[in-house]
Structure formats: structure tokens, C-alpha cells
Image 1 (cartoon, rainbow, N blue to C red):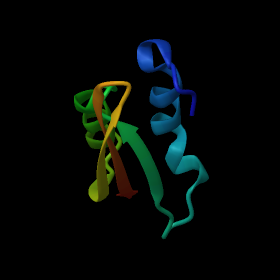
Image 2: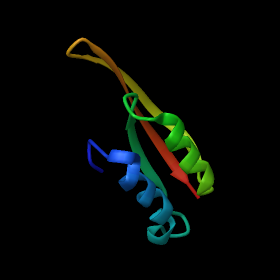
Image 3: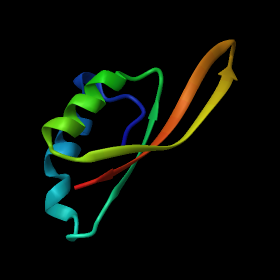
Length: 76
């Protein structure tokens, strides 16, 4: 996934097509930063019928900016 994803086109396509590439017991690991639109990610997850669980959250300060990195597990 690209660091910059104008209009979240790549993320949207990824989420819309993810089930096509998963086995019946497959899962997705999604790494997301607080600089992104978390609400949009959560909406995509819900629209595609995935269950979401936060696995890890780490907060860092980079160049004076506080950034959170979150790891999610998505399951069908």
C-alpha cells in the first residue's frame, strides 16, 4: 500500500477485492496511521462485512508530530 493514496483509491479497491484472494479461514493484517482517515477505513471494513480487532497500537513523536500506528486483524 502506498504511503500517499489520493482519495483512498488503492485502499478502497483493496478492501472491495480482498475476499477474492482469501481462503475460507483467511485474514488480513492492516497497518494504519493516525494521519489517515480512520473513520473511512472503519466504514470500508463494515461495508465489506469484515470483523475488526485491534492487535497493537504504538505512539511515536516524529519531527515534533505525534503519530499513532495501529495494527488491525480483519476476518470475514
